[in-house]
Length: 316
Length: 249
Ligand SMILES: Nc1ncnc2c1ncn2[C@@H]1O[C@H](COP(=O)(O)OP(=O)(O)OP(=O)(O)O)[C@@H](O)[C@H]1O
Ligand SMILES: [Mg+2]
Image (cartoon, rainbow over all chains, first blue to last red; front, side, top):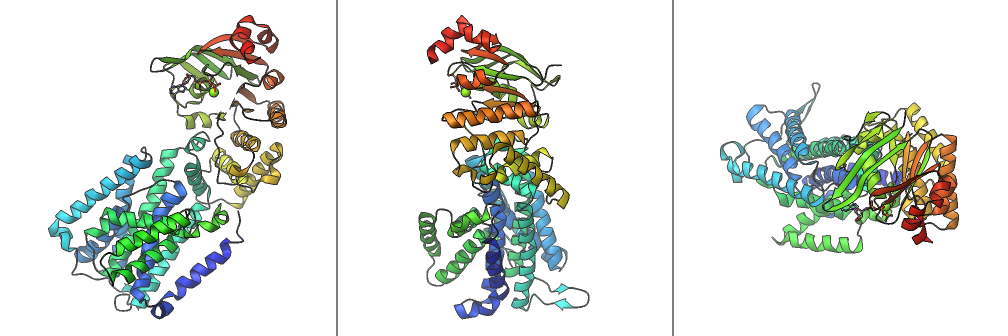
């Protein structure tokens, strides 16, 4: 346990996140871009709970992101104008799907696990794509928007005030990554690391591998769905691309590029990815190839990701 | 009551009969060695006992209960621990964390999302005890994958010991070790055997280790049991000389 490097890193991360909307403009950004970085970072960190800290690769995690997004959007559009309820339902839908799909696939390993997650992801994609009357089909689900939060004594108008919405997302982000950090530093988290490091040894220490992978999958799906719900609120819109496998791949790229063995790696990966996407896509439609080149360079020169250099610091 | 009773187990791999109707009874507190030439079926026999895969036929009783159909995890929880011929550890974690995972698993804490101060203290004390016993204390915070082969094997034994097993199965603990390391690991095994009256079954090619440690020896050859008895008898047995010791010399 080497905390000497961890503490300063944590401080830097939180200072940057707390002040981001104030300097985003000076570096050519805008508040919604900052919010998008947070949301995608939450998704990448949720994926990485499974990928980096349990050693299990899901290539269809956008399914849970998308379920969170549709759950939230449909709640506001069809049930009740409440952002909190929308997030809650989005997470619930993602959690239920995660529990069921997780139970079906935990026995698979490696490529087979990844392939099955893609397959399930595409099933949800086609449902969203085809079921026009409910999901809006290819055009997506619009005609709704995120609702102000009523705290009783006051109202937070996160709809009209993007700055306020950023901090709303930041609070949810902080609680979420706090919970993930707590879990990773617990016996449960160490059990997951054990599975990542050596499944055979873990099994012969009496650890029920499948049960623990299922639980890790659940944690991952819950926060993925939460990120998806926030994404829908951010855009006041969602469409089938929120579920599609290329988005799943993007989350993997963020985690690997930033450093999947480090806690904050996926945040760094997400920031680079989202910022690049924003800058490059205003010049060319081919933004994905630019990100592809950056990804290849990072993987070549930092095989453990950008934050992989400090890996000794995060040996639990 | 015998601690372990293996009754007439066999294991086929396609046409190959890796273990052929072998029986073994181990009494509490015993240190039993299994020897035999390469490919004799020793590791396969361990895999059957520990539940790595099921036997094609035969039965395994542990502590008087039939465990033949149980998973490895369930057998661990009933008090079986093992090491592997090729070291199985958590290479990118520290020695202390390797032990911590084993200690927490043994204490039934593996699903806990947090630990109280009391539990944390107990876990720490147990880790220190194990480090001390194995002389790994100065290397506690090193990544275990960076340590010498001998230290890695010692760490694996300590992880198995952390489970407070009733029986410890060691697959060639001295494999690939130099003289000094072999001596150290033998001493460690003898110490835990004597101090904790721990029942141990070990597979070993190094005859110094075997004759130094074992109360009784079983000899396997081509999947079948060739001989069984105290070290003196085995050393003088003609079948064994022919099948194994002769070749080794
Ligand atoms: N999982 C398996 N699948 C197929 N064949 C196997 C398997 N495990 C072992 N065998 C075969 O069974 C035979 C016995 O192997 P085993 O590993 O038990 O021998 P051993 O006595 O441990 O040898 P060594 O001293 O070299 O470790 C060998 O012929 C081996 O190739
Ligand atoms: Mg062997």
